[in-house]
Length: 353
Image 1 (cartoon, helix red, strand yellow):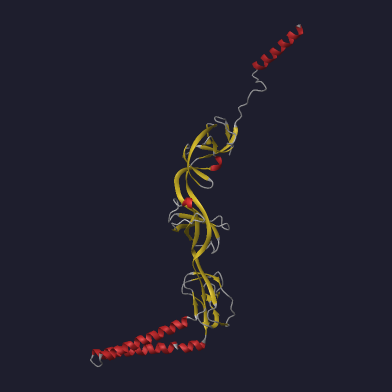
Image 2 (cartoon, one colour):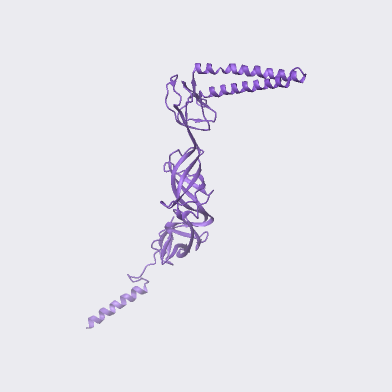
């Protein structure tokens, strides 16, 4: 029994000795700082978008056929010095293909009709001079005017008939189709000669859900992208909207005009259109990924004096990745963007870069 008391006393003395030396019990809690990453908040802008898709089309497109038969003569592109080919840009009025038929051209007799016009004009001038001197009657002078008019019509028609032997670009565009014909081969009337498209300006027909009809308006800006050019966003705008809702699809139709000056979009491409229906500038914008939710509230963590603090949020506009903070955060707050998942209010943190 005496030994038992001695053992208890020894244990008490050892405990008192350890405590007096400043050592903590083995199971005492440690206040360890949680490593986190933060960003300092600045103001930015965000847009509310309505997404849709569609196929882009050229504003102008045409296939030019031969109006007459003749020998095929593909012209040279003045920019390259080589015959025109698919992908070449052409200007309005530029000659692309010429057909030749000497028998047809001789039948038109363009030179003779031009000479007849010159003779008629000379005779008209002579008759007017004589009329002023009283040398001819009004009827004789009017007859000379009729002859000039008839000669001019004949000459103009001859020119039009000769123009039918030429394939000329009706607008600025790009050659998208050029059927192959051997040079000097006989081409029949009505054969396809060249396909042209103008797609520096493009349009896209879209279908929008009924729920978006109160948001989408004419002239709203549109961002257009294609999976082959993900780094480039082209600008467009809503140009037309139908007021009617389809009873089958519950959608309504619209049209987007697209600026495509660098010809990055090609006719027939399937593209994505993001319609900007609202926009907030000079607002605090944060990533959706850092927002936590609990009991119908949204909140994030910020850091103040190496301590985690909860901030309840009221949010506004949002896009695919970000959201506008209407209240709850201030400019220059240090928002926790990494390591927030296990944080608690007033927890000590260590900021890492």
